Image (tube, rainbow, N blue to C red; front, side, top):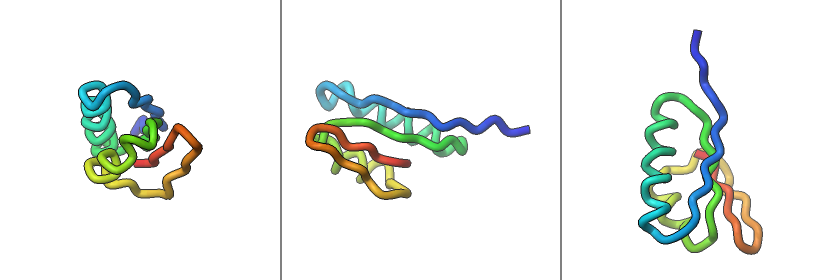
Length: 68
């Protein structure tokens, strides 16, 4: 029986804080989990480039939710 999860990952701070969260999200997605990354719009592009979003990106003034 598979135990796949929906996981939300906050990715805030400097790039040194955000990059490991993207790597974690990519690894968890590869294992079949559904991932949502919450970050500022400043990091939306690098997250999209490295995480290859599968769904629409929802955005607010300061926060982007990126579904991987």
